[in-house]
Image (cartoon, rainbow, N blue to C red):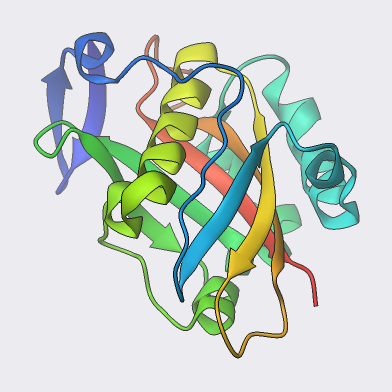
Length: 189
């Protein structure tokens, strides 16, 4: 069982029974369309090597010490410059999906849309399912997951994206079971 915040109250959920099993190692999306992600590559070496992601992880790793980050740790001065490119998702047991509770301002500008309050699967099709399973994997394993890919959309100069997603907890000391993730997402171009 897990405690998590929902509209300023704490509820208990049977989390492990609600999070889907993760996908096999090939976790590749194939969605297409004007605003879809055309492919998602799991543990993408290019994402792991991205300079901004490396800077972000250099701040996270000493705090993590093989444990999930706490939201309070990310609300400190060293992380302020990263917040415009961050995404916070938490498990919504009613919808059986991850709810975006924070979508950084740089992401709003780059994507041309605000995702706060949207569920991950609302991305639609294979893209939504792939992202959903990626967050589930991070929560189940407690390990960072690097994703990368190309955007398949028109009139955008930035097409390449890279992301790292980590498990997140709202409390210190760390809760026994996780229900949230933090992602840092960057666009090339």
